[in-house]
Amino acid sequence: MEPEDTERMRMVAEQIEARGIKNKAVLQSIKKVPRHLFVPTSYRQSAYRDQPLPSSCGQTISQPYIVALMTELLSPKKWHKALEVGTGTGYQTAILAELVKEVYTMEIYDELQKIAKANLEPFNYRNIHFILGNGYQGYSKAAPYDLIMVTAAPPFIPEKLIEQLSEGGSMVIPVGRDRQELYLILKDKNGNIHQEAIIPVIFVTMQHEKRE
Image (cartoon, rainbow, N blue to C red):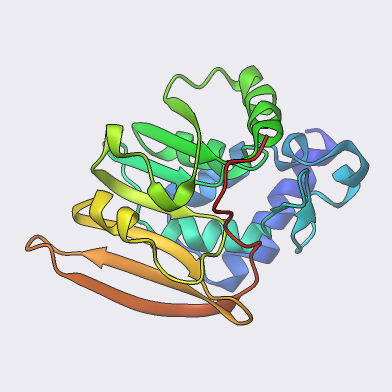
């Protein structure tokens, strides 16, 4: 086993399982995906620490526990179709690709999308669709989605994302300006919306305008 593999197993045991994450499929996907390959080279020695890390375009790669928590909250299944808002370097994208049938992943920064594509290419995922665009608008062409994962914080929950959530679907999203809260949003089979505040979080701000 490579040193990075040992560090990853320790990360899962000490940072994720020890803090209450129980979904076996989620844990297995985090054990499988090498987080250090999605971290900028200058930060790779910190890839398995309990902290977020900088990436490009002023964005960040989320803390491993937060990745696990958000993924578990969605209760992903192999037949699900997911929308990810905020591809970043592609780490969360890879986790979702391990767990669901299709992932539509949106990124507003062209540079970050190129980095994510390069990071993900060696893994030969065939279920990832890349969209360059504004996450506030979602991606209506492939809607509705069983799951929506939002990895940047808007000041309010975008209505378009609610509309694109399927009946029986779920969304996790950080919301707020100065103070942010992670929310689990559920749409029941009658189309009614239920929301639950989970924990305080700190995410980068969701951008409105397309960036090159």
